[in-house]
Length: 247
Ligand SMILES: NC(=O)c1ccc[n+]([C@@H]2O[C@H](COP(=O)([O-])OP(=O)(O)OC[C@H]3O[C@@H](n4cnc5c(N)ncnc54)[C@H](OP(=O)(O)O)[C@@H]3O)[C@@H](O)[C@H]2O)c1
Image (tube, rainbow, N blue to C red; front, side):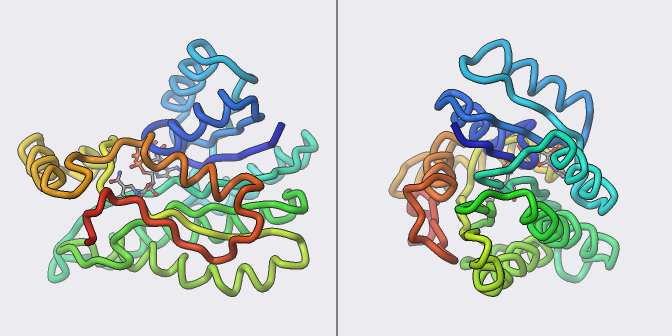
């Protein structure tokens, strides 16, 4: 049984990964930003699915004090992690000429600084061997309008991964990432897309080799591969799951 912490697992890809690890018999800890949403996810995971009860902890990764508190809680309960899934993220599209400093800094704080501080802090709570998996995005390799802050935030973490692997090697920790393509989750509505825009996305995805929009369950196997022993030889790897969108 592995101890696995997944950030931002109250919905979407993170929730689906939590469910999958739980069903495999692992001990899963999920984090969320909003107490009511965290409770909802825990209720669903712990009443519907088989496996060990999932633990939920509040951590807004944009807030360094929350990261310290998360680390303190894990230390107090003696948790040592086999895998840390850095999944939580936001997508707040803005055209370049309208992009504000506040919006840029917010996206960088949530998608880059937060996961990096979490990785730094929680590297003290990881076993040897241990695995960190960052949920990046295809935007690092493919350009989309209005995604400058988002693309930069994901590319920044990927840029740090090589040196992280070098520095964390002594602790037996490897760092790799998954780049999902367009995946049906709450992130589209949260980003401000209306039903027509989401339908447009579905239409675009119907033209890809996969022929449909991806689902969280399409992304989870790549996360599992990088989190568990099957990926012991992988360092700084990027696994793209995009249904062929970038071909
Ligand atoms: N869906 C896609 O098409 C797609 C494509 C490429 C990459 N990704 C990446 O996949 C990851 C998961 O996204 P998703 O699609 O599953 O979206 P989602 O359903 O919106 O899940 C995002 C999760 O992150 C949490 N979160 C947001 N801000 C946070 C913060 N400051 N601190 C802690 N948690 C926070 C959310 O909680 P709240 O609900 O409380 O905000 C939620 O639990 C993200 O990193 C995203 O960039 C998604």
